[in-house]
Image (cartoon, rainbow, N blue to C red; front, side):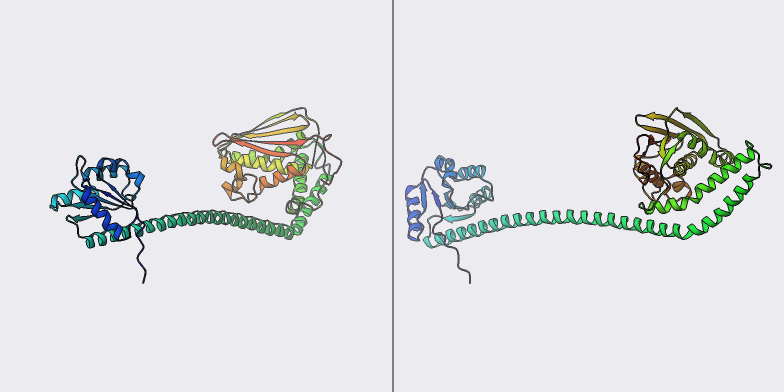
Length: 423
């Protein structure tokens, strides 16, 4: 059984303008062991100095002069919030319903009718003080509980944030693993079909060389011989395609050394090699592609010719796919400090900032117009970027929706590159 709290140390304020009545009440409390009692017969001082006394219980006479008990109670309500105000026991000979209603409306806790019954006085005071002490303990526990809940809530929020970050990191890792697996699978597939492709291309190139050796049927500077030479050149480039793809997935594999390259010549070759696409096929679809060239007087660059043709071919085919109703492509070259700058622009559909951010990523549907419109692999520009980097250069793009795109390739001059051809 829980023992009731000891209330004898409680601070009790008695406010009664009748000195005899106030003294009698004080003696009753002292006899019961309550030693911390204060008596005030001037109600005006009680209202003004209430906060200084800070009582645990107020014993208040209802009818006083010149300030009534209701006025004192209303003043206390102005000074303190209801949850911090001590209990108020009204002492009055007026037991009318109106007096009770007014006192209760003003915040009185209980009533004692005069003349006072000492036993009833002590029982009511004990009950009020016990209730107050229990209320204060509840408030203390409630405050501690709120702080504990706030602390736990903050911890849960931090844990939730950490969990969300861990989930996001896990998803990113999963995507990277998926990409790596797809890259590994594609690399394995490329290795598997390399032999068959090379066999087929060997036949094509072999017969091409035989035809080129027949100078009677294919004389020098003839249109047929030029077309045949371009076919053989395209076949040679494609013969190296699988090896270059394999190198893309295994960067440390041996690769063709860089050499001095006339970039303007490579541009002319690539335009001619892709002519069936931008000329014949585009015309068949009712579209016209115009080619504009501003090829400046530029120094030789250090690169790999077939890789450069592969990069330019990807850009040209992407530009064509981005102009289904026709348009124009322009090629501009100039020296840019110690580097050579090539700009390839089109008047196509353009790209959003989100597409630009992903355009050079492997398997991204934003990485080529072919991928987004015709179901391509999304590897073209990723491979192009890798080739440019391996040649010591870089590639960038500027684009806006419905305003075309401009790809800028910067390659090192031959004098700028070190002699390490295995780079």
